[in-house]
Length: 113
Length: 114
Image (tube, rainbow over all chains, first blue to last red; front, side, top):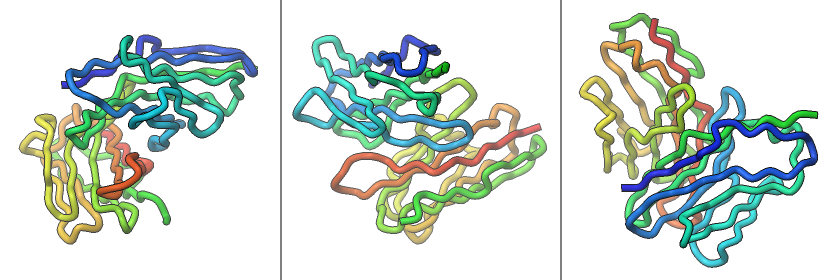
């Protein structure tokens, strides 16, 4: 079975500062990794995904994430955040032999002016 | 491509009543998924379809829950004899069977059981 841990339930940050949202996963098999963003009362939007290849993955809205197999991590980063980045961010994992996503509990990113 | 549509957006019901939600996936997407998200939690997998076939169901999907995708297009999720614990956001997602791996989620149906 797979599991995802997002240790930070909330991350406050000032506008234009860098941010890192942490994600660690557990799995006995190879996985795909994802980051989704959810704005209030909306569904989830895919930010980026790691399937294979380069461990540094670039996504939409200036976000990127790095897959670290030895540390079983997939942290999300942005060098300079905007007010509009305020949202809930979910890390998710999918085993390569299944077709369902296992989500973490989410990290609330709050950007202050 | 009009995205994944879910109807209704909000539903308030009394405990014990039955409710049904509808999801219209992106038209060329073979696979359709249902997730449930409670307050402060990430979405939890409920079930998924490939065309009209229901391929997997979570143990979270009790006997009171049933999902269908009769013609391989839209899907319905019915909850019978609702309980307060059923209050949640119900999310639908779809994707093509092959190719670019990544779900497209709808905006969800928020169910409140009073």
